Structures are given as structure tokens and as C-alpha cells.
Image 1 (cartoon, protein in one colour):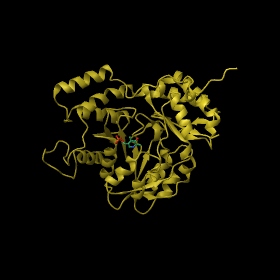
Image 2: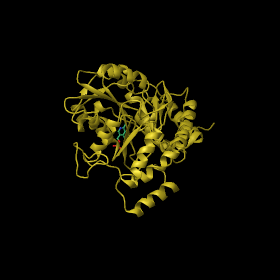
Image 3: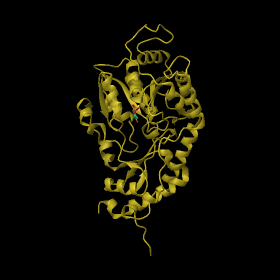
Image 4: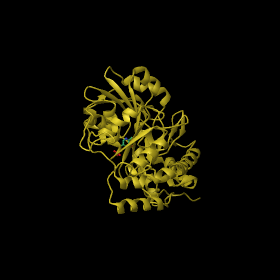
Length: 390
Ligand SMILES: *Cc1c(COP(=O)(O)O)cnc(C)c1O
């Protein structure tokens, strides 16, 4: 009888090489980038590619307006400013998210409140938001984690009852949809990131979308040194900064809108096949919350059975050719952020935090074929006695 040795012990890796990210520019992107470079008009100007990209991206997400900015952190900051949030105000953020959610709130001069998340799907819920609410709460920042939409119906209910604004952080969820509606204009304002690791990227970049024309005008002014659209060059109607995207970035992003759905479909093919193969395994794919129409699968969260050794598993999977990551530590474990935030108990996250690993996106090895190799690796590694800490 032959026993396959794990790659970490010198055996053959179950997965070939994982594609690098981002992918090379396609022909449309290259042509548009060349046009921009040749034109000499590299900065955003009225009627240019930044405006075209903003309009098309807003339309793709069923939102009326968009404002492009330099990155996703600034998009969150601009959204907060446009909502009039500042010193003395509290903004509820999920404790399990990227650090920028909290630091954008701090940049606006407000206080982040680190709310618990569901132990099942790691998103905010109506209940965890309610537990974090105070008389100072002005908004909740809902993260569509890993490309999977948060349970928006119950969240909107609790926010409307409390009279607080809803910001959707869709940095990881380009093209995702909840109950048949694209993320983006479900809450009051929504933000996206085009940083290098995201499913749509220009190296850096960000954008906010909203259905509220007045909020969009305030956001545009904030990102354009306080000017008003079409107004005087040296007319400054509000406090603002130069937070603009460049035309070169827009040239990379505009053609990407056209292939977003196909890429999402490929990632879902991979994720569905992998979830199917792992249905009775000790390492499982985390299922999205109820109400998900399109999970954009920016990355795949996996849950280990209780008592498994996460660090050893991550090393063994890495050797098998799977790009895994331990994921977020939780904002409450980031000392400088915790020191500036209000904290509430987080039993939901604490129950699962040390059992989550991430599979990084690079189109998740392109569809169903790659999923089999990944499933073999996850089963082999999960079955090893060292995965049990033995
Ligand atoms: C990437 C990310 C951000 C920040 O976006 P940048 O473009 O890197 O500033 C904010 N929130 C979440 C959930 C993210 O994943």
C-alpha cells in the first residue's frame, strides 16, 4: 500500500502553482492606458475617463451617482464626511474586518465601536449592531466580507428604527448582490477599493456610490478641494482635499467592468465545487449569510473543526500550493486601534477567530478543475494527526 506523503514532508504538492495577481492587462486596457499616456492628460478632468468609469461603475451597481477617489480608505472617510459625521459621534464597525474601517472613522474624528460578528458567517447582524448602539451612534459601517453580502434586510431594519446611516464597505464585493440587488445602493452610501489585492484593481484606487444626489455632491466636493462640480476653480464651498483617482487608473478599471461577471462566475465555480467536495471534511467552506444572490468570492473563508492546529495547517497547505492566510486578527487585538475605540463583548468572533483561514483569490485557480486539487490538499492535510495538534 502506498501512502501519499504531504508536500510539507517532501511529497508532491496537490495543487500546481497558483496564478499571480493581478493578471496582465488585456488588450482593451492596454489600448486605453496607451491613449491616456499619449494624451498627456493624466489627472482627472471633467468628462474624462474617471467620470466615465464612475458613471459606468455606478450603473453596474444600480446606484445613481459615484465619486472616484485615491483608495478605499479615503472612500470611507469621504462617505463619513458627506454624512456629516465627526468628533463626538460613534460609528459601529465589525470587529472582524480590515483595519481601514476603524482608521477611516478615526480620520473623520469620530469613535469606532467594535461590534461583534456572527460566529456562522462573520458578518455584522441586527443583534450585534443593537448590542453596540449608544446615544452617540450615527452610522453603521457594514462590510460585505470576502465578497459575501452582509444580511442587509435585518441590518436596514435596525438602522432605520434607530435613525442611523448605513455605509456599505464593498471593498471586497465588486459585483456582489443581495436579494437580487447589487451591493452599493442598498444602504445610504457604499464604498469600493481597487487596491492590488482586490478582485478589480489598478494598484490603488477607490470609489463611493450612492443614490442620494446631495450626498454625492458633498462627497465630490470633499474629494475635490471643496469645489463644486462645474464651479469656479478657486471657488471652495466646503473643506475638502485632493483625493482624486488618476486617468491612468481609470483606464485600467473601465474595461474591467465588462469582464467582472465572467470572473465572478469562475470564482463561484471554484468555490461551489470546493464546498461540495468538503461537505463532510474537517475543514469546510464558510457559507454566506441568507439572502445572498451573488457572492463575488473575493476570497474564500474556511472553518477548521474545533481543536485543529491552525498554524500547522496553514504551513502544510502552503506547501501543497494553496495560498492561505490566517486572516484578520480582529480589530480588538490591534492595540493602537483598540485604544481609540469603544469595545463591546465579542463572543461570536471569539468562538471562531482561531479556526478561520483564508484562501487567497487569484481567480481561485480558475473554476472547477482547480477546486479538485485544492480539495485533495485540504482533505490530506486535515486528515493528518498533526492537524489535530497531535
Ligand atoms: C481593502 C479594504 C479597505 C481599504 O481599501 P484601500 O484601497 O486599501 O484603502 C477597506 N475595507 C475593506 C473591507 C477592505 O478589504
